[in-house]
Image 1 (spheres, rainbow, N blue to C red):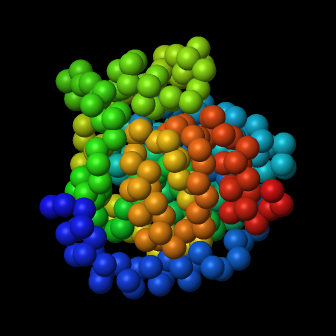
Image 2: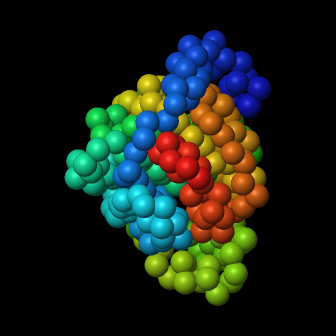
Length: 256
C-alpha cells in the first residue's frame, strides 16, 4: 500500500481522533513537579542525562526508567512502577520506541501530560510497522543486526544514522552502552492511546535517519500535539537538550 492510499483510508477514521487530540492539546498543561523519562532502542536510561540535569536545575523531580527492552507489556510495567512512586502530577516523556510505552502507560492516573521526542505515537491497537511502511524507510533500519533473538545497531549505523550530529567520541561512548532489544518487543501493540485524552507535546527531529521526520510530523498532527521542530539527529535529547528541556517544562506548566 502506498502512502497516498494509506492516508486516504485513515482520513475519515482519524478525523474524530484529531478532534479529541486537538481538544486535549488545547487545554492548559497541568502544573507538574515530576518528570518520568523512558528510553527507546539502542540506548539505556543514561541517554536522558543531559535533560535530567537541566530539569533538576529547574527544581523538578526527574526519574529515568530502565526499559528492559524485552516485551511491550514488560516495558510498560517498568514505567508504571516508576509512575506509581510519583507524589503528584507527572509528565511522562518517551524517546523513539518508548513512544509506544508512553502511549500505553500514559493512562496511569499520575500522568498529567505526555511528551514524545522523535518517538512512535501509535493509536490503540495500531500496527506501527504497517504505518511506518507508508513512509520512506529511514537509513538506520538497514543497520540493525541480530544475534539470535537480540537486536542491536551496528557501530557504523549508530554513528551515522542514530547519533549523526554528535561528536564521534561521544557517539562511541553511547554506542558502548547500547542495550540489545528482544525481537518480541517489536511485535507488541498498544491497547490504549493516552494522547486521545491527555495534553500531548511532540519534538520532531528534522534530520532524523532512524524514524522518518515526515512520519513524526504525521503522528504529531494526528494527535493534535503541541509540536516543535528541532534541527537534530534522532538523539535530539542529547544534541539539543535545551530545546527538549524547554518543551518538557512547557508540558509541566513550568516557566521555560
